[in-house]
Length: 440
Image (cartoon, rainbow, N blue to C red):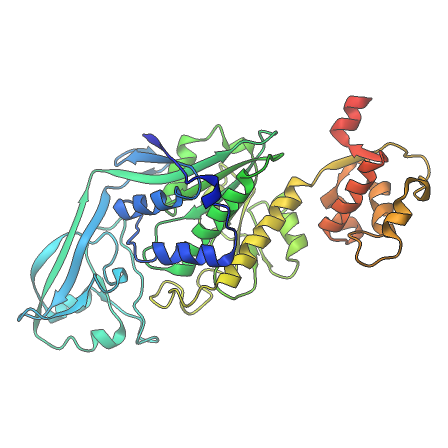
């Protein structure tokens, strides 16, 4: 089942600054998200206030590749209380307190049994861990180590007001058509509860990016997926195999709000155009593909082998606050979100502009001065390109070298080469290869 979710009027979605993205994170932070359930749908509806989404609902029990869509989980509350009624752990205070997919429960539990269902971070005694049990029926609570040390009574009342029953897996999708059917896929997981960097930062950056891309015509088509991790990408792949060959570039976006340096994890191929673009933009912060992490491992499974990498700041598992209550609103920063949006936009612009050109005057070096190009550069450092950049573009405009090929060969920035190419196109010294072939 698929349902369109209408976005707000354009005037309300044009803000692209870090402060606006941070406000979105603040609004979404309290929601208890999981791989299914009302919290996930509530989050998707919130995203749809900014960009139009199609809400897909996949029924529980549906086969999806080697997986089966699980039952839907919803929770109203949970707590551990002393026998005289004093609540010492309460889901209302932090939705990380309950292990995700815990089944309903209301009974007296002995201390030793309770402790077998308690998870803590002894090395970080004030933090609450984030734990899940999606595919193993059971129950559990996550406490700070300090809270756990107070569990000295012989028995406690444990209450989990939750349902696990047939329902739906929900995900949001936005397709933005371009002049080409080649697609750039962006994928974001939306299944974590109150974790600001590892969940909400990617959602915010992807939302603002989608709004910016949709504002003007594009060469490529774009597809944004807001999905629950692992099972969401598997469900999408199972239902959309005919689309997979159209995806020529892809990025999973995550952990983009902390102040760490940018990190790019390559696709399985390692040599895809998206890998080369990111290696050019982030030459010292590129990691090879490993079959662990976010949904890139599903897109890059051998039967699909899609050109999808993962862009992060501090990678998952590499920062102390990861998967704990310390991944809160204080960890993400408006300036980091803005920088992340600008970085992804730089990648989009690089891929959009990675054309192949053919010289219209390939025999000998054309005279640049009479075409005004020497006056255009004039030795002024403020120009976007210089004489050497012009000469590299002219020499490699043979219908075989893309701008990215030129950037790698000449060791020059892509934006500089793009500016030079635009200037040469303006005086009809080069043309995009397709246009030149059409003229011939």
